[in-house]
Length: 388
Image (cartoon, rainbow, N blue to C red; front, top):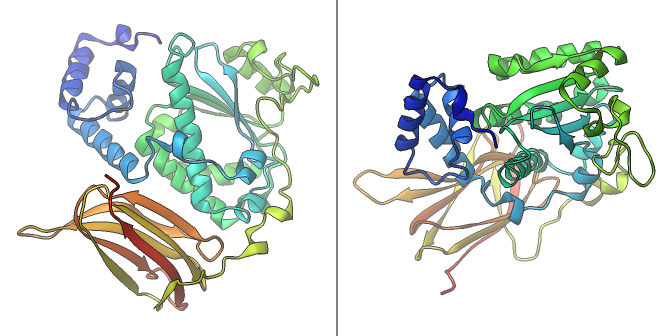
Protein backbone atom coordinates (compact mmCIF):
# COMPACT_ATOMS: atom_id res chain seq x y z
CA UNK A 1 0.00 0.00 0.00
CA UNK A 2 1.26 3.42 -0.89
CA UNK A 3 2.85 5.60 1.77
CA UNK A 4 0.09 8.15 2.33
CA UNK A 5 2.31 10.32 4.52
CA UNK A 6 4.58 11.40 1.64
CA UNK A 7 2.14 14.04 0.49
CA UNK A 8 1.49 15.38 3.98
CA UNK A 9 2.85 18.69 5.17
CA UNK A 10 5.07 18.74 8.25
CA UNK A 11 2.14 20.12 10.24
CA UNK A 12 -0.14 17.30 9.07
CA UNK A 13 2.49 14.71 9.97
CA UNK A 14 2.68 16.19 13.45
CA UNK A 15 -1.12 16.04 13.75
CA UNK A 16 -1.11 12.42 12.57
CA UNK A 17 1.42 11.47 15.25
CA UNK A 18 -0.63 13.32 17.86
CA UNK A 19 -3.77 11.47 16.76
CA UNK A 20 -1.98 8.10 16.84
CA UNK A 21 -0.89 8.78 20.41
CA UNK A 22 -4.39 9.89 21.43
CA UNK A 23 -6.01 6.67 20.18
CA UNK A 24 -3.22 4.36 21.32
CA UNK A 25 -5.57 2.86 23.93
CA UNK A 26 -8.07 1.77 21.23
CA UNK A 27 -8.20 -1.71 19.74
CA UNK A 28 -8.18 -0.90 16.02
CA UNK A 29 -8.89 -3.26 13.13
CA UNK A 30 -6.20 -1.34 11.23
CA UNK A 31 -3.46 0.81 12.75
CA UNK A 32 -1.87 1.99 9.49
CA UNK A 33 -1.29 5.65 8.71
CA UNK A 34 -3.75 5.36 5.81
CA UNK A 35 -6.51 4.21 8.16
CA UNK A 36 -5.88 6.92 10.76
CA UNK A 37 -5.70 9.60 8.09
CA UNK A 38 -9.26 8.83 6.99
CA UNK A 39 -10.62 9.97 10.34
CA UNK A 40 -8.45 13.08 10.41
CA UNK A 41 -9.43 14.09 6.87
CA UNK A 42 -13.11 13.52 7.67
CA UNK A 43 -12.80 15.99 10.55
CA UNK A 44 -10.48 18.51 8.85
CA UNK A 45 -7.44 17.44 10.89
CA UNK A 46 -9.16 18.34 14.18
CA UNK A 47 -7.68 15.74 16.52
CA UNK A 48 -10.39 15.92 19.20
CA UNK A 49 -13.19 15.62 16.65
CA UNK A 50 -11.47 12.75 14.84
CA UNK A 51 -10.88 11.01 18.18
CA UNK A 52 -14.57 11.33 19.08
CA UNK A 53 -15.68 10.06 15.66
CA UNK A 54 -13.36 7.04 15.80
CA UNK A 55 -14.39 6.06 19.34
CA UNK A 56 -18.07 6.33 18.47
CA UNK A 57 -17.44 4.08 15.48
CA UNK A 58 -15.60 1.52 17.63
CA UNK A 59 -18.58 1.44 19.98
CA UNK A 60 -20.92 0.96 17.00
CA UNK A 61 -18.74 -1.93 15.83
CA UNK A 62 -18.89 -3.51 19.28
CA UNK A 63 -22.65 -3.18 19.64
CA UNK A 64 -23.29 -4.55 16.16
CA UNK A 65 -20.58 -7.24 16.27
CA UNK A 66 -19.02 -5.91 13.09
CA UNK A 67 -15.45 -7.09 13.78
CA UNK A 68 -16.40 -10.74 13.36
CA UNK A 69 -19.22 -10.35 10.82
CA UNK A 70 -17.27 -12.16 8.07
CA UNK A 71 -16.84 -15.22 10.29
CA UNK A 72 -20.14 -15.31 12.15
CA UNK A 73 -22.78 -14.09 9.68
CA UNK A 74 -23.95 -15.57 6.39
CA UNK A 75 -25.99 -13.39 4.01
CA UNK A 76 -29.45 -14.72 3.15
CA UNK A 77 -29.40 -16.67 -0.11
CA UNK A 78 -31.94 -14.39 -1.77
CA UNK A 79 -29.74 -11.33 -1.24
CA UNK A 80 -26.57 -13.04 -2.47
CA UNK A 81 -28.31 -14.34 -5.59
CA UNK A 82 -30.43 -11.33 -6.53
CA UNK A 83 -28.71 -8.20 -5.18
CA UNK A 84 -26.32 -7.12 -7.92
CA UNK A 85 -22.87 -6.21 -6.59
CA UNK A 86 -19.35 -7.55 -6.92
CA UNK A 87 -15.69 -6.65 -7.24
CA UNK A 88 -14.48 -6.84 -10.84
CA UNK A 89 -10.91 -5.61 -10.58
CA UNK A 90 -9.01 -2.41 -9.75
CA UNK A 91 -8.90 1.09 -11.18
CA UNK A 92 -5.73 2.84 -12.35
CA UNK A 93 -5.19 4.25 -8.86
CA UNK A 94 -5.05 0.84 -7.20
CA UNK A 95 -8.58 1.06 -5.78
CA UNK A 96 -10.83 -2.03 -5.77
CA UNK A 97 -13.49 -1.65 -8.47
CA UNK A 98 -17.04 -2.62 -7.48
CA UNK A 99 -19.94 -2.76 -9.94
CA UNK A 100 -23.65 -2.87 -9.20
CA UNK A 101 -26.41 -3.10 -11.80
CA UNK A 102 -29.05 -1.27 -9.77
CA UNK A 103 -31.76 -1.18 -12.42
CA UNK A 104 -32.52 -4.92 -12.68
CA UNK A 105 -32.55 -5.46 -8.89
CA UNK A 106 -35.98 -6.63 -7.76
CA UNK A 107 -35.67 -4.70 -4.53
CA UNK A 108 -39.30 -5.23 -3.59
CA UNK A 109 -38.87 -8.96 -4.04
CA UNK A 110 -35.72 -8.93 -1.90
CA UNK A 111 -37.43 -6.91 0.84
CA UNK A 112 -40.39 -9.32 0.83
CA UNK A 113 -37.98 -12.24 1.11
CA UNK A 114 -35.75 -10.89 3.88
CA UNK A 115 -35.73 -7.95 6.28
CA UNK A 116 -34.37 -4.40 6.34
CA UNK A 117 -31.95 -5.60 8.99
CA UNK A 118 -30.68 -8.35 6.67
CA UNK A 119 -30.12 -5.96 3.77
CA UNK A 120 -28.42 -3.36 5.97
CA UNK A 121 -26.16 -6.02 7.46
CA UNK A 122 -25.35 -7.29 3.97
CA UNK A 123 -24.09 -3.83 3.00
CA UNK A 124 -21.90 -3.74 6.11
CA UNK A 125 -20.70 -7.25 5.25
CA UNK A 126 -19.65 -6.08 1.77
CA UNK A 127 -17.76 -3.08 3.18
CA UNK A 128 -15.96 -5.26 5.71
CA UNK A 129 -15.11 -7.79 3.00
CA UNK A 130 -13.60 -5.01 0.90
CA UNK A 131 -11.65 -3.60 3.88
CA UNK A 132 -10.20 -7.05 4.62
CA UNK A 133 -9.17 -7.44 0.97
CA UNK A 134 -7.32 -4.11 1.06
CA UNK A 135 -5.50 -5.02 4.28
CA UNK A 136 -4.50 -8.43 2.93
CA UNK A 137 -3.33 -7.13 -0.47
CA UNK A 138 -1.30 -3.99 0.27
CA UNK A 139 0.82 -4.41 -2.88
CA UNK A 140 -2.27 -4.41 -5.12
CA UNK A 141 -4.32 -1.83 -3.23
CA UNK A 142 -2.38 1.38 -3.56
CA UNK A 143 -4.89 3.28 -1.41
CA UNK A 144 -7.66 2.53 1.08
CA UNK A 145 -10.36 3.84 -1.26
CA UNK A 146 -12.78 2.15 -3.62
CA UNK A 147 -14.17 2.93 -7.05
CA UNK A 148 -17.81 2.11 -7.81
CA UNK A 149 -19.82 1.86 -11.02
CA UNK A 150 -23.57 1.98 -10.40
CA UNK A 151 -25.62 1.15 -13.50
CA UNK A 152 -29.12 2.64 -13.29
CA UNK A 153 -30.44 1.27 -16.58
CA UNK A 154 -34.05 0.04 -16.20
CA UNK A 155 -34.39 1.74 -12.84
CA UNK A 156 -38.11 2.08 -12.06
CA UNK A 157 -39.97 4.44 -9.78
CA UNK A 158 -42.13 1.50 -8.70
CA UNK A 159 -39.07 -0.17 -7.22
CA UNK A 160 -37.37 2.87 -5.72
CA UNK A 161 -40.50 4.44 -4.21
CA UNK A 162 -40.90 1.40 -1.96
CA UNK A 163 -40.68 2.80 1.60
CA UNK A 164 -38.53 0.01 3.16
CA UNK A 165 -35.93 0.69 0.44
CA UNK A 166 -35.76 4.35 1.42
CA UNK A 167 -35.36 3.34 5.06
CA UNK A 168 -32.42 1.05 4.25
CA UNK A 169 -30.83 3.62 1.91
CA UNK A 170 -30.97 6.39 4.51
CA UNK A 171 -29.71 4.11 7.27
CA UNK A 172 -26.78 2.94 5.12
CA UNK A 173 -25.82 6.51 4.26
CA UNK A 174 -25.76 7.33 7.96
CA UNK A 175 -23.67 4.25 8.75
CA UNK A 176 -21.31 4.91 5.84
CA UNK A 177 -20.67 8.54 6.75
CA UNK A 178 -20.11 7.74 10.44
CA UNK A 179 -18.05 4.55 10.17
CA UNK A 180 -16.36 4.38 6.75
CA UNK A 181 -14.97 7.90 6.21
CA UNK A 182 -12.98 8.69 3.08
CA UNK A 183 -13.69 5.21 1.76
CA UNK A 184 -14.78 6.35 -1.68
CA UNK A 185 -12.43 7.61 -4.38
CA UNK A 186 -15.03 7.84 -7.15
CA UNK A 187 -18.52 6.60 -7.93
CA UNK A 188 -19.71 6.59 -11.52
CA UNK A 189 -23.50 6.59 -11.86
CA UNK A 190 -24.34 5.66 -15.43
CA UNK A 191 -27.57 5.36 -17.42
CA UNK A 192 -29.23 7.62 -14.86
CA UNK A 193 -32.88 8.40 -15.73
CA UNK A 194 -34.56 11.62 -14.69
CA UNK A 195 -36.16 9.97 -11.69
CA UNK A 196 -32.68 9.31 -10.30
CA UNK A 197 -32.25 13.04 -9.83
CA UNK A 198 -35.29 12.94 -7.55
CA UNK A 199 -33.79 10.07 -5.54
CA UNK A 200 -30.36 11.68 -5.48
CA UNK A 201 -31.78 14.95 -4.14
CA UNK A 202 -33.50 12.94 -1.38
CA UNK A 203 -30.15 11.40 -0.44
CA UNK A 204 -28.04 14.57 -0.49
CA UNK A 205 -29.08 15.85 2.99
CA UNK A 206 -27.59 12.65 4.47
CA UNK A 207 -24.25 13.06 2.65
CA UNK A 208 -21.17 15.14 3.38
CA UNK A 209 -20.07 17.55 0.65
CA UNK A 210 -16.79 15.64 0.32
CA UNK A 211 -18.78 12.54 -0.68
CA UNK A 212 -21.01 14.48 -3.06
CA UNK A 213 -17.92 15.84 -4.83
CA UNK A 214 -16.81 12.27 -5.62
CA UNK A 215 -20.01 11.36 -7.46
CA UNK A 216 -20.11 11.58 -11.26
CA UNK A 217 -23.54 11.20 -12.86
CA UNK A 218 -24.04 10.28 -16.54
CA UNK A 219 -27.15 9.75 -18.61
CA UNK A 220 -27.70 7.29 -21.45
CA UNK A 221 -24.85 8.51 -23.70
CA UNK A 222 -22.74 5.33 -23.67
CA UNK A 223 -19.83 6.88 -25.48
CA UNK A 224 -19.63 9.60 -22.85
CA UNK A 225 -19.66 7.35 -19.78
CA UNK A 226 -17.49 4.65 -21.38
CA UNK A 227 -14.81 7.26 -22.06
CA UNK A 228 -15.04 8.46 -18.46
CA UNK A 229 -14.72 4.92 -17.11
CA UNK A 230 -11.73 4.06 -19.31
CA UNK A 231 -9.99 7.24 -18.19
CA UNK A 232 -9.90 5.83 -14.65
CA UNK A 233 -10.04 2.06 -15.31
CA UNK A 234 -7.86 -0.12 -17.56
CA UNK A 235 -9.89 -2.03 -20.15
CA UNK A 236 -8.84 -5.46 -18.87
CA UNK A 237 -10.28 -4.60 -15.44
CA UNK A 238 -13.69 -3.60 -16.81
CA UNK A 239 -16.44 -5.86 -18.23
CA UNK A 240 -16.92 -5.53 -21.99
CA UNK A 241 -20.54 -4.57 -21.30
CA UNK A 242 -19.20 -1.34 -19.79
CA UNK A 243 -16.58 -0.59 -22.41
CA UNK A 244 -13.70 -2.80 -21.26
CA UNK A 245 -12.37 -6.11 -22.56
CA UNK A 246 -13.20 -8.44 -19.67
CA UNK A 247 -15.58 -11.33 -20.42
CA UNK A 248 -16.68 -14.48 -18.63
CA UNK A 249 -13.82 -16.99 -19.15
CA UNK A 250 -16.22 -19.88 -19.81
CA UNK A 251 -19.11 -18.35 -21.73
CA UNK A 252 -17.65 -15.10 -23.09
CA UNK A 253 -20.54 -13.17 -21.53
CA UNK A 254 -19.62 -9.44 -21.71
CA UNK A 255 -21.52 -8.77 -18.44
CA UNK A 256 -19.12 -11.03 -16.50
CA UNK A 257 -21.56 -12.99 -14.29
CA UNK A 258 -18.53 -14.75 -12.76
CA UNK A 259 -17.74 -11.42 -11.07
CA UNK A 260 -21.21 -10.19 -10.14
CA UNK A 261 -24.83 -11.04 -10.92
CA UNK A 262 -27.19 -8.79 -12.85
CA UNK A 263 -30.13 -9.01 -10.45
CA UNK A 264 -33.46 -10.15 -11.84
CA UNK A 265 -36.94 -11.04 -10.50
CA UNK A 266 -36.97 -12.80 -7.14
CA UNK A 267 -39.01 -16.04 -7.28
CA UNK A 268 -42.07 -15.89 -5.03
CA UNK A 269 -40.91 -19.09 -3.35
CA UNK A 270 -38.49 -16.86 -1.40
CA UNK A 271 -41.22 -14.55 -0.08
CA UNK A 272 -41.50 -14.77 3.71
CA UNK A 273 -45.22 -14.02 3.42
CA UNK A 274 -45.52 -17.61 2.25
CA UNK A 275 -44.33 -18.82 5.65
CA UNK A 276 -45.11 -16.27 8.36
CA UNK A 277 -43.76 -17.20 11.79
CA UNK A 278 -45.91 -18.99 14.33
CA UNK A 279 -45.33 -19.07 18.10
CA UNK A 280 -43.25 -22.00 19.33
CA UNK A 281 -44.39 -24.25 22.13
CA UNK A 282 -43.49 -22.82 25.51
CA UNK A 283 -43.17 -19.22 24.38
CA UNK A 284 -44.48 -16.51 26.72
CA UNK A 285 -46.33 -13.47 25.40
CA UNK A 286 -46.74 -9.76 26.05
CA UNK A 287 -49.40 -7.31 24.92
CA UNK A 288 -47.83 -3.94 24.11
CA UNK A 289 -50.30 -1.15 23.57
CA UNK A 290 -49.88 1.65 21.07
CA UNK A 291 -47.37 4.24 22.25
CA UNK A 292 -46.09 2.05 25.09
CA UNK A 293 -43.23 -0.31 25.95
CA UNK A 294 -42.47 -3.22 28.25
CA UNK A 295 -39.25 -4.33 29.88
CA UNK A 296 -38.03 -7.72 31.04
CA UNK A 297 -35.19 -7.95 33.59
CA UNK A 298 -32.62 -10.75 33.76
CA UNK A 299 -29.94 -11.27 36.38
CA UNK A 300 -26.53 -12.36 35.08
CA UNK A 301 -24.39 -13.97 37.76
CA UNK A 302 -21.17 -14.52 35.86
CA UNK A 303 -19.23 -12.79 33.09
CA UNK A 304 -19.33 -14.57 29.69
CA UNK A 305 -22.84 -15.89 30.34
CA UNK A 306 -24.90 -16.11 27.16
CA UNK A 307 -28.19 -14.22 26.84
CA UNK A 308 -30.29 -15.77 24.07
CA UNK A 309 -33.59 -14.63 22.62
CA UNK A 310 -36.13 -15.48 19.98
CA UNK A 311 -39.40 -13.70 19.41
CA UNK A 312 -42.11 -12.93 16.90
CA UNK A 313 -44.90 -10.40 16.84
CA UNK A 314 -48.50 -10.18 15.74
CA UNK A 315 -49.77 -6.86 14.41
CA UNK A 316 -46.55 -5.50 12.89
CA UNK A 317 -42.92 -4.73 13.70
CA UNK A 318 -41.54 -3.79 17.12
CA UNK A 319 -38.57 -1.85 18.51
CA UNK A 320 -36.12 -4.04 20.42
CA UNK A 321 -33.09 -3.23 22.57
CA UNK A 322 -31.02 -4.68 25.41
CA UNK A 323 -29.10 -2.68 27.98
CA UNK A 324 -27.16 -3.29 31.18
CA UNK A 325 -27.77 -1.32 34.35
CA UNK A 326 -24.71 -0.75 36.51
CA UNK A 327 -24.98 -0.80 40.29
CA UNK A 328 -23.26 2.23 41.77
CA UNK A 329 -24.11 5.49 43.51
CA UNK A 330 -25.94 6.49 40.36
CA UNK A 331 -27.48 3.99 37.97
CA UNK A 332 -25.85 4.02 34.55
CA UNK A 333 -27.19 2.42 31.42
CA UNK A 334 -24.78 0.66 29.05
CA UNK A 335 -26.23 -0.08 25.63
CA UNK A 336 -25.67 -3.73 24.69
CA UNK A 337 -27.95 -4.26 21.69
CA UNK A 338 -28.89 -0.86 20.21
CA UNK A 339 -32.53 -0.09 19.55
CA UNK A 340 -33.76 -1.29 16.17
CA UNK A 341 -37.15 -1.84 14.54
CA UNK A 342 -37.46 -5.58 13.98
CA UNK A 343 -39.78 -7.02 11.33
CA UNK A 344 -40.61 -9.94 13.60
CA UNK A 345 -44.13 -10.19 12.18
CA UNK A 346 -42.47 -11.54 9.03
CA UNK A 347 -39.54 -13.57 10.37
CA UNK A 348 -38.79 -15.07 13.78
CA UNK A 349 -36.06 -12.92 15.33
CA UNK A 350 -33.23 -14.85 16.98
CA UNK A 351 -29.96 -13.77 18.54
CA UNK A 352 -27.54 -14.02 21.41
CA UNK A 353 -24.87 -11.99 23.16
CA UNK A 354 -22.00 -12.84 25.47
CA UNK A 355 -22.43 -10.79 28.62
CA UNK A 356 -19.44 -8.63 29.47
CA UNK A 357 -20.86 -7.63 32.87
CA UNK A 358 -22.65 -9.20 35.78
CA UNK A 359 -25.87 -7.79 37.19
CA UNK A 360 -29.11 -6.62 35.63
CA UNK A 361 -29.79 -6.82 31.91
CA UNK A 362 -33.00 -5.32 30.55
CA UNK A 363 -34.72 -6.52 27.38
CA UNK A 364 -37.08 -3.84 26.07
CA UNK A 365 -39.89 -4.06 23.53
CA UNK A 366 -41.29 -0.70 22.46
CA UNK A 367 -44.32 0.20 20.38
CA UNK A 368 -43.93 3.96 20.79
CA UNK A 369 -43.91 4.64 17.05
CA UNK A 370 -47.39 3.15 16.62
CA UNK A 371 -50.25 5.50 17.51
CA UNK A 372 -53.18 3.16 16.90
CA UNK A 373 -52.06 -0.47 16.74
CA UNK A 374 -51.10 -2.68 19.67
CA UNK A 375 -48.65 -5.56 19.21
CA UNK A 376 -48.47 -9.04 20.71
CA UNK A 377 -44.98 -10.41 21.33
CA UNK A 378 -44.34 -14.14 21.66
CA UNK A 379 -40.90 -14.70 23.14
CA UNK A 380 -38.42 -17.04 24.75
CA UNK A 381 -35.42 -15.48 26.48
CA UNK A 382 -32.88 -17.28 28.64
CA UNK A 383 -29.53 -16.73 30.32
CA UNK A 384 -27.07 -19.61 30.22
CA UNK A 385 -24.04 -19.49 32.54
CA UNK A 386 -20.56 -19.44 31.06
CA UNK A 387 -19.02 -22.83 30.29
CA UNK A 388 -15.71 -23.07 32.14
